[in-house]
Image 1 (spheres, rainbow, N blue to C red):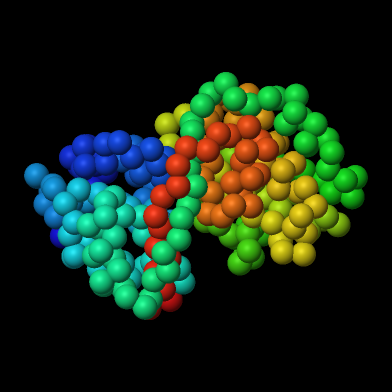
Image 2 (cartoon, rainbow, N blue to C red):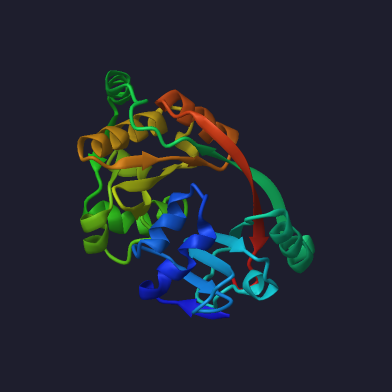
Length: 258
């Protein structure tokens, strides 16, 4: 098993042909994430790790399935197999420590967003809430809270986020209670992360905040890609204008290194 440098990412790119996952593109394009393969010069199997997500493609390889780097301490690792054979390896290796579920992907269409409707969602936010663009103070506060840290977790610093990221927060009495931000970035696009503090859910905050972020992206020529972990997120995506593409197998693997 070999770690793949940014300069060698093109060698594993063909293994991921046909994957419509922007996080894979983020890694292959050199923005974020890390990759491993069975061979550097002529790889047949590959693994991409970005945030909590582990993607497997090519010829199933047990060594790659076992590869959880020591510095990856997320309690739940989301493993996405590229085939039924990869699924078997994951299930055999992690047995009772993994939970299989379905995630939902959405089509990446440029002209499906109704800007006027999105503006209406933003303006419908109750007056006691304020939407603000993520600044350095927001960035630092976001990373301190367990519920919100994934909004900016893939950026090494605020300067990194300021250069590549996009995002907004909803505040209530000056406290951050909801956010919509770039989980990852790729060429002319972001993968959206939405988080709302538990006691503030079902108040329309995520709808307003996501609408604001999508409008900002469209104004800047950036595509706001969406992927859902559950039906509630999928329903929100549909309301924003996204069209369902497919569901795909994901394993939540308990990380013993956490």
